[in-house]
Length: 291
Image (cartoon, rainbow, N blue to C red; front, side, top):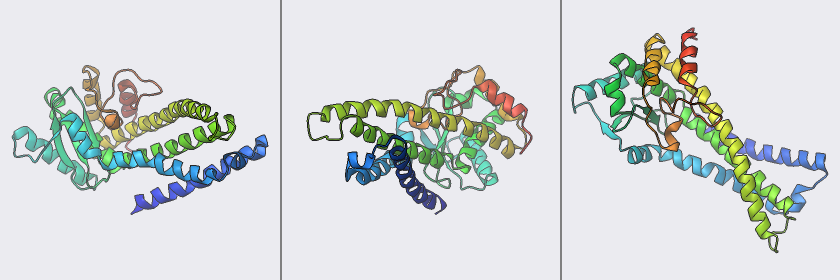
C-alpha cells in the first residue's frame, strides 16, 4: 500500500513539476509554450506520465518470469541435493533476519554472478549462477546472498523503477515539447518530419543523461546492499572476501533489466556503470562502522 501511495504521489508530483517548469520557461524566455503546443500540452503531460512509467512498471511486474526465461534460472526447493538444500536454508535464514518473506531461490548455468528481482519484497526471486557456487566458499556465498536479500528488503527494485519512470516522463515530455517549439509548433504541415527528427534526437540525448542518473543511483544502492549484507552477517569480512574473490573472476553478463541487481558488473567503472568498482566497494566495507 505504501508503494502504491508513493507511485500515485510521484505521478501527481511530476504533473506539477512539468507545469512549474513550463511556467518558468514562459517567464524566463517570454515564450508561451502552452500556446505553441496548444491544447495538446495537457495531453502531452498525461502521455509522458503514462508512457514514461508504463514500460518500467510492466518490466518490474514481469521481472521474475523474464529473469527465469533469459537466464534459464530453475527454481529449487532444497530437495535436489546437499548444495541446493544449504542454499535454500541460507536464503530462508537471511530473509528471516531481514524481516521479509523467503524469496524464490533459483540456480542458472553461467559465469560467477547472482541477482535478485521481483515487484514485491515479499514475493521476490534470488538466483545464483552455477559458477559462483563452485568458486566461492559457503561463507562468501552467504555474504553474496545477504547482499541480494538486502536489495529485496530495501525495495531497491521498486525504487529504481520509480526513478526510471520519472526520468522517462521528463525525457518524453521535454523532447516532444522542445521539438514542437523548434519545428514551429504545427505538426500537420511539412514540418512534421522536422518534429519527428528533433524529437528523436532530443529523446536520445536526454535519455543518456537519464541513464547517467539511474546508474549513479544504482551504484549508491550497491554500497547499501554491501552494508546490508554486513549487518545481516554481523561482520563485513565475508562480503569483503566475496568481493576479493570476484576480483579474480570474470562476472557473468546479465540482461540489462537485471544488471543493477547483480552482485557485480565488471572490472571497469564509468558513468554508465550500475556498480562501483570492486576495489571501492571493498574499501567502503573496510571502513564499515555497522551503522
